[in-house]
Length: 277
Ligand SMILES: Nc1ncnc2c1ncn2[C@@H]1O[C@H](COP(=O)(O)OP(=O)(O)OP(=O)(O)O)[C@@H](O)[C@H]1O
Ligand SMILES: [Mg+2]
Image (cartoon, rainbow, N blue to C red):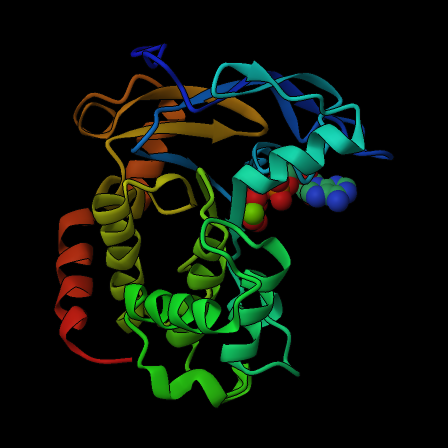
């Protein structure tokens, strides 16, 4: 293991084990990760390795069987609903399937306005004019034209829907974004556009992010540091360039081999950046 600690992590998961009822082995075992403020930290592993389970713990949506969650240095009381609820205000999740994450009966405008109204963060969101201004600023930030506000989710492309999912997550000014395979359900042609949107949000807003993916090429493109997970266990961690050039664990080597031509794959995806979704 290398690069074990981050100076002052925004989020630290310490020795997390999650044992789902009825399963013989835990989905996550003694996992510790640290997320540095202002960075995109990767979590990569094959299907069933426990990435979503650990992401849900990070977001305060799943109580670990054992282990500690620290946010900005303070332990989150994961045994109490109130403690988890408070933590959830600091963290937002972006899911793999943007269609399932949006209410089909609400327009894009209504969806964003509702979040702004319910959370009433930052500006005085009781004032409708303020809400609408913030809604339009959010749409702009995620690269959506304001004429889409009256559309329903089904009338958007997958890429547009994921942009709405990101706008909705950003609406509450989260300190941490947990993105769980946010491009896996999208056409390859729009994947890079959405990856670049996450990068832009990170660079321009300083948004901290835990970025979950099964594709090591994507993690390398997105993150400076990453954790590699196999069968519920963090087997390796470190800077992505080192993970690639000098993988310490056979599983990481296996993941690298699973993406035979990483560079070529990404180049192809970058090309599609110039096509619109
Ligand atoms: N709600 C649940 N109840 C019982 N077992 C679960 C539940 N959710 C996940 N599991 C099991 O826990 C293990 C880890 O699942 P998890 O979804 O966290 O993995 P993952 O890395 O996100 O996989 P994928 O790449 O397919 O999304 C798997 O064996 C899965 O079957
Ligand atoms: Mg998953």
